[in-house]
Length: 178
Image (cartoon, rainbow, N blue to C red):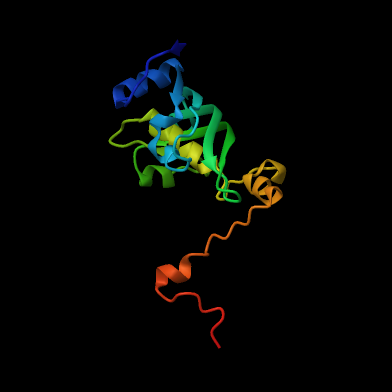
C-alpha cells in the first residue's frame, strides 16, 4: 500500500501501523529544505530535488525495518576549482529502527540502524543523514576538463590564493629582504 502523506514526524503508533501494513511513503524534497546539505553547496546553487521512497516492513529480531531508496542530485563545491558541481545521488539502504543504543547492541547481526527519537521517526532527517553519509569527503569534478581551474589555467590568468597573506599579517613583502 502506498501513502502520499508528507510527514514531519511519524509517531510510534503510526509507525507501528505503517510497518504492519508494509506501507510506502514517497517524497519529493527540494535540497534547499535540507539545511545541512545546503551548507555544503555554493550560495545561489541551482534548484535540486531528491526523490525518496520509504518502505516500512517487519524485520528480524522483532525490530521494524525501513528500506530507503533515494535518487536525485546535490549541488556541492568542487574542492579542486571551488566552483559548483552537481553530485548524483542513488541510494538503496535497509535500516533497522531501534528505540535506543541498548536495543541496537542487542541485535545479533550488525544492521544499519536508525535511532528513533522518543519512538518517533523524522523522515527528512533520516533522508538527510543517509545522503550526507554517501557524499564524498572531498567532492571534485570527475573529469579535470570540467573543472573551473582548467578553464582559468587555459585562459592565462594566474591564480595566487595567498598573495595578500603577508599584508594581512602586517609584515609587508619580505621576499627581497636579506
